[in-house]
Length: 422
Image 1: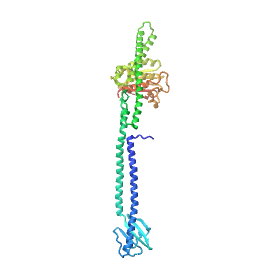
Image 2 (image 1 turned 90 degrees about the horizontal axis):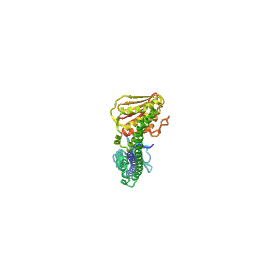
Image 3 (image 1 turned 180 degrees about the vertical axis):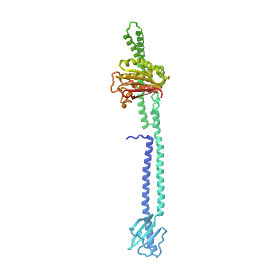
Image 4 (image 1 turned 30 degrees about the horizontal axis):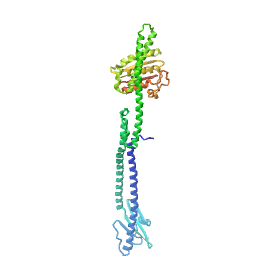
């Protein structure tokens, strides 16, 4: 499983773990060496003192010259009987622990006689404790130093990576005149990463430029034929020799032309990706756009045998971009028409938004987010489109700072809600 911790934090943790391992091993080695050296030195010292007692003091008939913490025993000498607790000690060096007391014992057999020196350990234990405290303090200081060094080195190592991430994240990097990133970094791994970003960003800039140019060119070139079609429809509508059916068809062509002109304007603004450009589409209130779209879609909905309702549940006097709001509402009404075979389609106005409800086939909850992706259509898709309508709605809402979501409408159907104030 890939760790989700920041790289800087992982570097610090690695330093701390390395410090723990090294200082822990070093501390354990010190303790082991101290024990070994202590046993070896004490054994040699006791052996030397016992030799002096046997060959010097006893040979001259003198009492053993020993310090207060060391005692001499010999079973064959009445003045130096061996205590029971030391009687079982083996020859050579050994330790005897009795309760909270501990003793070093050195036993030698010479000329068939047994001689023994016993030394209390409290002085050595005190020194040992001081040494252990020093080792523990050194261990803790080593871990703390490892943490500090890891933090400093991690900040130093990560500084160019963080700087590169901030540069890549900056929105101006998609500008055609944005400078290359690689020249600002040495020829190392970070420099290679910057060069890879330069290559990828360059391809992205070219792709965006081609898309914007294509959208701008198409939008610009379509304006002239659309204007011709709209003018021709106006002239045909005024012709006196048209019957009612022909006049209705001319008006339908005119409405389709107007819708296409709005779509062209919408695509052009989205291609520019600038919020201030949206004002070119004009402004209108929510009620004005809803009234316009109701007049357009209500006849088509009723032709299919459905019932259409325009319900105002709240007043909203704010002005919105006409082209964008018209496109969003139109696509949602068209979507409701296509996926509803019987029942009702409702356009409900609220303060700060609206929703389109239908009694159609509905959308499974696990597909709610997918329905706003390009070329995604419902399970019972119709032949009227490619699945781009809801994707366009999502793009417009993101561009304008609006929010669109879908929810189930019991017992059957869906409700698309658009919030115009966030």
